[in-house]
Image (tube, rainbow, N blue to C red; front, side, top):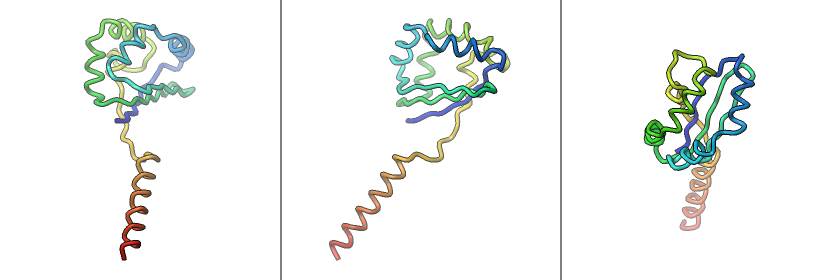
Length: 124
């Protein structure tokens, strides 16, 4: 499954957020991968809007596994001061977005419909 989420970094903390993400702890990287986070990217706007994208089998399960990881607890504690919000761990404040379009999915469906129509014409 593809998952997109948003959060908000404090505008004054953007340089620090960028610095920390330029060299994420290797043990954190390994734990994310082991928890099923694939093709994970973060995008940050100049106003602090943070958008994340990840591919995983089950987002809730991937998040639950990370919640059990000691390295994640340390990372979230380190990052908490950089985020807008009510003091919760940053990864608990992710607001998941609904996917409304995917090129590959729609193109695959369009090609299948075209191929089906072609087969029907050939059988007629």
